[in-house]
Structure formats: structure tokens, C-alpha cells
Length: 236
Image 1 (cartoon, rainbow, N blue to C red):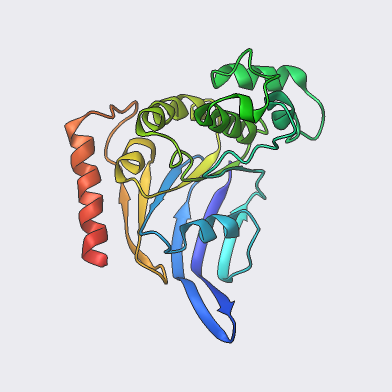
Image 2 (tube, rainbow, N blue to C red):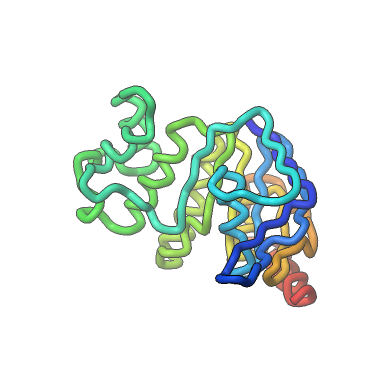
């Protein structure tokens, strides 16, 4: 598990001769094993924040990740290697061959018996399951989720959200989810970080006041999700 601390973290990109600020003095702390959802408008810098946490972008300010994390990353699209089977896509993430571990995770995400299929031979939902399994089988201490279900139809996405709770119960990772979906944030996370329009600043940080397991159809969950939308609207 990894502790995450951001202090006055900012990020800018150069567009020709112009500097465009994307993140503006973000500060928050996440204790080991906690699940944080990051909610904000399109283009506000949420994915850039994940890239920084994954070590893919530089930044200004302070970022503390302790101990140094093993990072699992689930992208908006599955990003499987099309020339490899599903089981070989998972094995590619391991430092040493471990066929038993690959087959175990394929079974956990409902892909038992599909290991020798290529990505184009299975549905998008099944590809995304493989992407989640690839991130989890390395036993990450920091798991980054970038709108992992946004490319799926809503029925499949709802099923995947429910199943993700079960998969995450099998890991001790600290989790950061980027999402546009306030109900998804309320259903999955311990806390929700609300970001403004670009350049993103912190509007609010809220505890999700419901014990687990949660019911996606619970009226109080929908009401809390609606309160997140009102906070975003007020900060727009």
C-alpha cells in the first residue's frame, strides 16, 4: 500500500510560445489502502494528474509516494496488444512467467476459458476485464483507474462497477479513480475530490458516508451523487 501526498502541485504545458496551466496548486493526502475518486469537468486535467502519479509527467510542487509504489494502470480503453492472446497480454505485465497466476486472474474476472482468444475475438467489455486483470495481477500498491468503464454500454458498465468492488476487496492497493460519473464515484470511493474547470483547483473533498457493500439503486446513494453535481455546478 502507498501513501499519497500532494502539496501545491501544479502542471503547465507549452503550446507554441504560450504556457497553458492545467493543474493549479492541488493539495490532498491519501492514506494507504484508501480509495479516492476524482470528479471534474472534461478537460480539467484529471488524466494529467494520473500521468503525474504514474511518473509519466513532470510537475511543479511536491508529490510524496511512500513507499515507492508498484503502479497498476487501467485506461479508458483496454489497450491490449492485438497480436497477443488475452493470457499473453496478462503475462506480458509480469517480470517472471507465472501461468497459474495468469489463469487465476482470468477466472477472477470472468474470462476463464478465453485465455487463448485474441482481443478482436471478444467483446469490448471482455477486453476491459482483461485490462483490469492485467493491472491487478501485478499486485499493485497504487492502482490508477482512468474512466475505466466510459467506453462500455451502461448495462455492462454497471455490472463492471459491481464486480470491481469484489476484485478490489482482494487487493490492499491505494486506489485513485478518475471519472465523470458522480454515481460511480459515490458507489466505489471512500472519498471524492471535486476539481474545477481548467486550470483545475480543488473545489471540495468529501467523505462518502455509506458503509460497504453499497447498493447502486439505493436512493441515498443517488442523493449523494446529486449533491456532488451541485458542488461542481457551484464551482463552475
